[in-house]
Length: 229
Image (tube, rainbow, N blue to C red; front, side, top):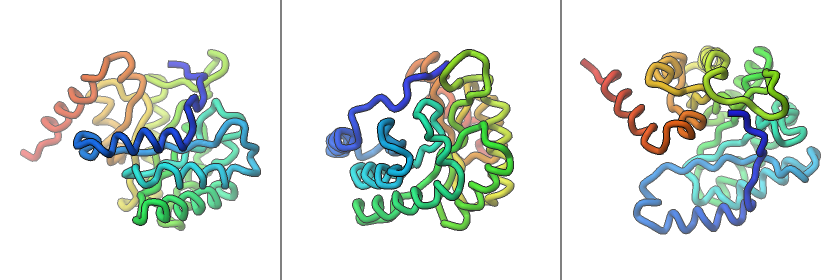
């Protein structure tokens, strides 16, 4: 899938309203909800910290964890925020605002691009360790393709996503959580991602092509394959 949409949504306040409604139901209280926060397209980079802070404060109460997304290729300038000098104040602001709004510690992860150089991946991992963050989501879509504008997801992304997850796990050790995402379309792909060091998995493209029953099939197969014998 080639995604050129960006962050099309009604804003953090509306997201908070919908999450509040969800959490008011028995079903809504039983599921894990992660809130993925990105910079508003029209907000200049110099105001990014306050933009992320506002969104975190709005949704943190209703989320089980927060993700700072600085890796979408469709928001102008967003990937520039992956350098640690820009990223640290954003993460500090989100953690402070999220925990204060929720009156508890809300686990905080950062989502990175597959197109980062290895040295930059190491720098992000070191920042995660230094700040005591809860983990990393690896990876977003790639711009390393010749199909025009937008980020590419799906099978072509898997090899690099696996490389990034392996590198992160080696750098981070066993503490922080790694959510592996990028090109997972089969049980074997899921196994590869877990073996690379991911603790949890996410998927988008396979969900689109295979429908809402697909995650359940993957989970059941994983439970069978990884069951202690």
